[in-house]
Length: 331
Image 1 (cartoon, rainbow, N blue to C red):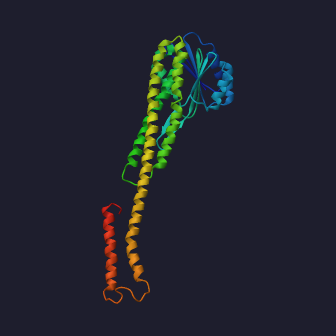
Image 2: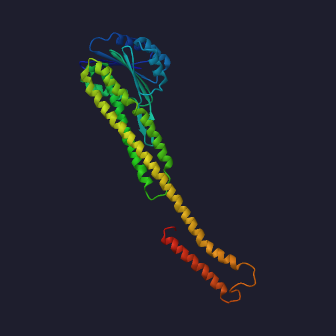
Image 3: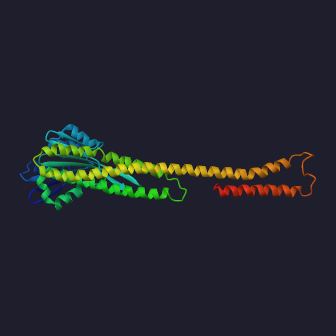
């Protein structure tokens, strides 16, 4: 657990890293309870046990339902008000190029009047970059706890945009391979990437109305109207990423259809080749079959040149069929 206390005026921060049962933690929590005017507290938890969240819930006065959401870590992006605490759930997201996979984690933010609690599940930590941005722009701290909410949302949404760009690159490479001259079936790769994009959509799409609801609700009614433009900027980036993810999903559907059409074309080509070769070999087989019958009275059986003429007939007819099929693109 990490406890940070910011001075909104100067941007100075006091940070303490400790275990939930340490003496340092008890002192840090007491410090957070006694925050003065112009001070902001931020508690960061990473994959906490249920006992840790329950203990902090008692200290911070969190609602039991909010605690349950933070423990389970299987929530859709949402925002709920529990008294004077705003609980926001969102998904962290990153792209793994080696596996062409979109991986997701989860963040819960509990925004109180003077303190913020963030609970992170997953390896990616947006709070570290959010803290760096707050340190680089201490003027944002005048918004109090909303500054932390904005910083975390900004980092998470920026990561969405970065992941969307990498997925676009993977899609472009798939398109080049699908429409190349090589006869390689990329159906499985396309389907896998499409499944990852759907997971991407599950993270991005539900957050759009959540952020819009925040701006039209708690933020608009707060005493900090100057914070709204910053959240609108995040919402604009989120809308662009949402549109990009929708486009990627549609393009993948088109590429998958094109791949299936190409596979069907390859199968038709193979069937034409098989049929053409069957026709080429069918004619000499027929002639040989006729002259292989044991009948005494057959045309040309007593002629000296009958045998070479039959061979020439078979070779000439097969050659003519071969040239005809080659001219029509069957062979």
